[in-house]
Length: 390
Image 1 (cartoon, rainbow, N blue to C red):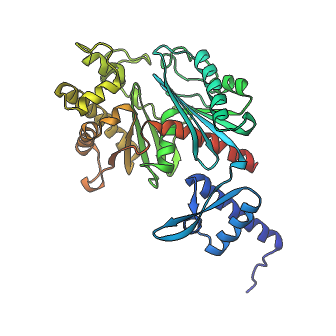
Image 2 (image 1 turned 90 degrees about the vertical axis):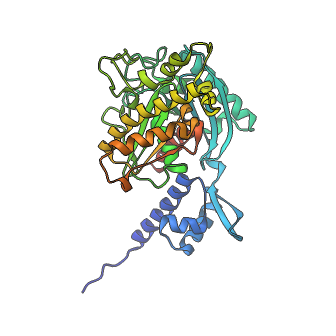
Image 3 (image 1 turned 90 degrees about the horizontal axis):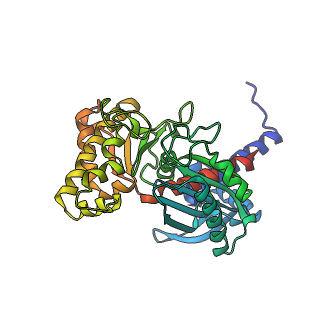
């Protein structure tokens, strides 16, 4: 029986493949011990040790000594020499910006409120200035910035990089967001829906970790979903998958900002909840609703529970379509914890068509209100990685 000979070229290819596998594991998790790297890659400890030494000497990786379970271990991260990235989350009422290294370590972060009627020209100019100031605050230069990721609370046309539905974000319509910010910074900029990026962040380092089929719901001023199938984000043909807040609940209901009637958002989105509870509560905000509900105010507790039931009915329909293992709830209203999660869970128990012991778990996000900006950081890192491989 003839055996294939292993040529020097194939040995070189194997070594390069092992290096790529190890680097991918470090980028995905942000940092691992050498023992954890062996488990994550399937490579032998000796092979991992040799590759790490090689990549440390070429300033690709950085190692430090840590203690795990009483034992010293070598912790491996990417070297800062590979550069920095910025993540930006523009939401209905807030702007968050984070500066991180390629190992996902956030080294600077800033958050500020936005006016209700904010516009793209003002906020993108402010974002560019803020990124420059934050880089200076950590003694870094613009030359170190490799890419920027932006999370937007709207469906994004993946071809044009613009918001694909009018009415969702007034003042931002038809604006090529990535292109505009790229002109200001002279750096590559990439944009995606914020729920997609929230799902990405929770999958890589939060409550969706290792859940290959899962759903992330963001319940804030607007409502959206990020869907992960077989470990990959489901973006759909045009990039607009996951518009959970625009599932029709009542086709004769109120007109939604998207132009349709009776969308889920018209029942439980931030403006809808505020409108229901505003009487005697001038200047009420979504954060105030959560605070009052957690504090035991019966009227606000009931409003959050009712919202949970509506969300749960819609989530049950989504679960019957994609059959996730876990549903993670994030966003401002998720800060109400079980006051919101309990009713969602009960709705799923009634309506999802799987055995009771196979129902998807419903849990609160681990990354809180930072999920989307951390996902934007991840988007930028992914793009830098793609360029470095090409």
